[in-house]
Length: 192
Ligand SMILES: CNC(=O)c1cccc(C)c1Nc1nc(N2CCN(c3ccccc3Cl)CC2)nc(N2CSC[C@H]2C(=O)NC)n1
Ligand code: NI
Image (cartoon, rainbow, N blue to C red; front, top):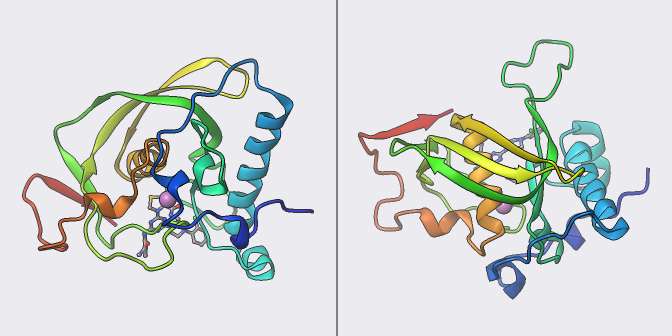
């Protein structure tokens, strides 16, 4: 399997493309954009396989946004494994590319990963809670151009918000309270 995106191809923090608002993706998809979506998903698939990610030196991820491979486009590949993996591999919780996503509603209640977040474009982990909405409704187009609406909560909601942030030039540490990065907040749900 030839993989297009290895770590040297991942855009790192400091590159202005990560701070731009990405351009919307026109439909029907061009061959180039369809291929880009496929190659971004291939990155995620390989990165989540312990043997393969070792072989290719890939940092594991559950999301990859186009600006992270230098393409300022409103698209992100998302591959979230099933939330309660049994011994045999199950269907993933979500596997697909989201195009032109919009968060159309979000809960007041907030959530954060209790160990903080990581990002393929940020080599130095920035410690601290990343407060996000606990529940969101996202409208996006799939590869066929169909408009989909999905409701998410907890970990999947955090992942989608992290990836959609990339499409608007935000990085996870923008949300960390640097004065007290691990301060617990009563109305925030901590996700392990
Ligand atoms: C600094 N400490 C940390 O990052 C951190 C540290 C510990 C735990 C968590 C939970 C942390 N946090 C965090 N862990 C992840 N992974 C856990 C491991 N996993 C994975 C790994 C191997 C095979 C298959 C898979 Cl699936 C891949 C995904 N992913 C994200 N993020 C933030 S939202 C987008 C998402 C992303 O894809 N980032 C590249 N955060
Ligand atoms: Ni990221």
